[in-house]
Each structure stands twice: as C-alpha cells, then as structure tokens.
Image (cartoon, rainbow, N blue to C red; front, side):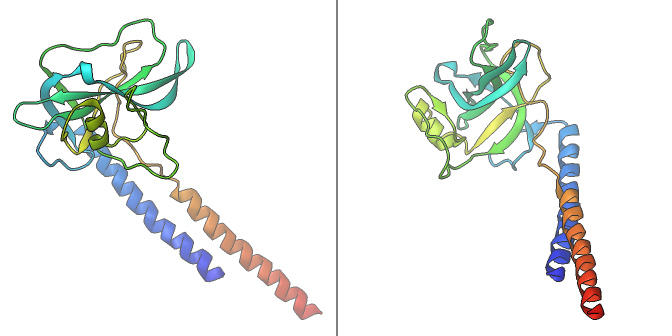
Length: 213
C-alpha cells in the first residue's frame, strides 16, 4: 500500500509538470496574434476568418447560468453558420446569450472578420441531454449533427469560438480567453504523499505496540 501511495503521488508530480507546460502553451497562444484560418487547423489555435453570418440558420447550444445585473440568469450560446468563399461553412459560437433580455442581439450584417479559437467537436455520451432539432436547441457540440439539423451540409469539422472583450449588456457575450484546464495536481500530490506518511506513522505505532506486548 505504501508503494501504491508513493507511486500515485509521484505520478501526480509528473502530471503537475505536464499541466503547467500546457497552461504555459495556452498563455503563449493567447498572447500571440491570430493567424488566418487554414483547412485543417490545430485545436485551440487562435485564428481569423472573413465571411458573412447566416442568422436565419442560427441555433442554441447548452444551458448556462451567469451572473448579470438582473441576478443569476439562464442562457445559452448562439451558434451561427459563417459562410466563407471557396470553403465549407463554419459553425461559430458567438457567445453567451440570456434567455430573457431587453435589448436585441448584436447581429452584424454583411461581411465580417471573426477572431476566435478552434474548438474540436464533441460526441454525445450516455447521459447527454437529447437535442431538440425542431427548436434548434442542442446540448452536444457536434458540428455535423448541428449542421444537418439547421440545413448546413458538410460544415467544417470544428467550432470557431469567438474571442473578444466584455461588452457589458450587449449580447452575445464572447469568450474572453482560451479554455484553461483545471490544475488540481498539487492538492492530489499532498493527498497521496500525506496518506503515505500517515500510513508509515500508523504502521510504526502498531509495530511499537506489538513489540511491547
């Protein structure tokens, strides 16, 4: 058991170094300027692309509660196809939108340039909520499934998540940074090594008691 606990703690040390390197790469990518979107971009690359939105085919993704001036508010992410010349349409996550709002959405017309990061698509799992294609409400960010449901055949096999500053009460509210995975490995290291130390102490006390008897 002692070897198992030490092994788990050591494994988390390696995981800690790996996670810190990943976070450092994300910070570098976030600080770098966006690059033009290619046909096969790497995941979480910050890119720029020009086209025009098809708001007539917009969809909703997820259900997320955020704090607003009105208090805790339920909302969703607006997914809109972006048509680009000589390339497949791209499903763009323009940001979070409250279900109940007093102002109209900021939906730009004409040709626009979008800056965001490439997010790989998801696949449904056993406990994933069912999508409602009739109302264009989706809970799995699957580009192919969403594209088929909203009439956008063969979209790009990823989602482009818009990056931008907070705009107060203007919606959609775009992402303000690239996603950052949680880094809890230090607490796991303390836990496993702490249990190993506790095991040694308990065993030492048991041996001491056994010798006395």
